[in-house]
View (cartoon, rainbow, N blue to C red):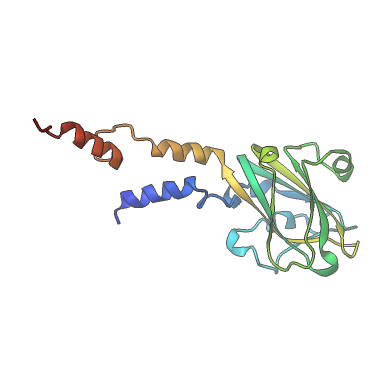
Length: 208
């Protein structure tokens, strides 16, 4: 297969959401931070590549109680389709998640309690692998940051998170892909097959 065809197939795959549905690359990982963690740097550590999503050697854990907040900024506006979570097992499983989009004012737990979340999610108990939780497209169509407020652990003392990820798309990538699909010179060798067929038909001699 020629490199041109490979590039074309890659563009089509992008439009179908196959290549950029995982948003790990869009997360501003250096500015991810958390509240009420035993080790503050662990907020960044649980933002892992897709291939490491099932890793259970690194986690973030709440400190003085079972509540914790993870702030996740993105490097550009994204449209979110779902959040992916691998949670602690047994008594360290948080049962509730409040999701706040584009709320830079969520700087402490008092603000989180006083602010209406964009979404409340009841988290599944007993799961040992990553679980995908769908998000309402209308509420998360242009997101530059998320605040995730976990609480209500089964054991009521500690909440643990192994992995946080997202599926969706980067709006600038969609614009770039659409631009690459445009054919600026329809009579060149790169013109679509349908266009070439029309050109051949136009120049074909007609029977008298």
